[in-house]
Image (tube, rainbow, N blue to C red; front, side, top):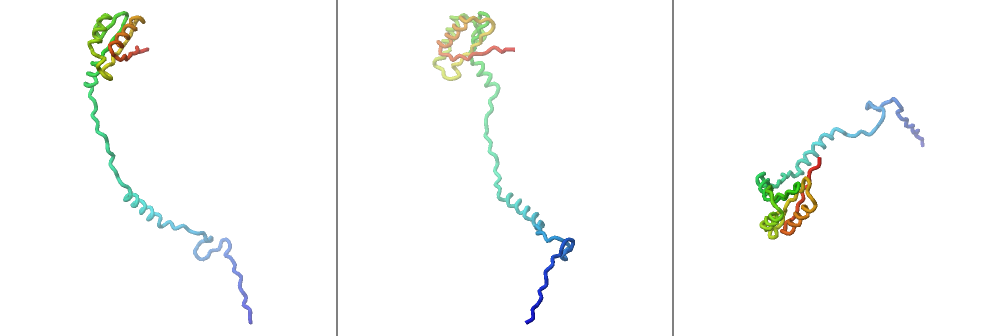
Amino acid sequence: MARKKRGRHVGLGPGRTNGRGRGDDEPEVPVQSFADIAFLLIIFFILATSFTQLMGVETDMPSGKKAETKADKTNIVNIHNGQITFNDKGVSMTELRKRLDGLGLKAKKGEDRIVMLEATGRATYQEYYQVVTAISASGGVIAIVEEEQE
C-alpha cells in the first residue's frame, strides 16, 4: 500500500489576504438591521404606552372682600402710652370689660373667640395684665401682636 503524503497546511501570514480583501478573519457584527430593530422598538413602546389625562381639582378661590370682612370682625385691643382702645375707640378699663362681656365670647367657638392684643409705646405691666385678665374672664382667646422691630 502506498502511503499518501499529507501536505502541511500553511497559514496565510501577515499581509496576505484570503481572497475577500481582508487580512484578518475577525467576526463582524451585522449593523444593517439595527435601524429596523430600533424602529420596531419605538413603534412597540408607542403602542404599549397608555396616555392618561391629568385630572385637576377645581377650587373656589376666596375673594379679597371675604378676607377683609373676616378681619373686620376680629376684635382688637390696643394699649398705647396708658391709653386703652377697643376697635379703634378709646375706652376705660370698666368700659372694656363691659364691651368684652357684651360680645358673648364664651358662647362662640374657634376663631370667633379671638381678641387681638397689641401693646405699643410705654404700656405698663399693670395695664397689660388688667387687659389680659379682662379678655380671659370674658371667654376670649388672646392673640398677641408683636411690634415690628426695625
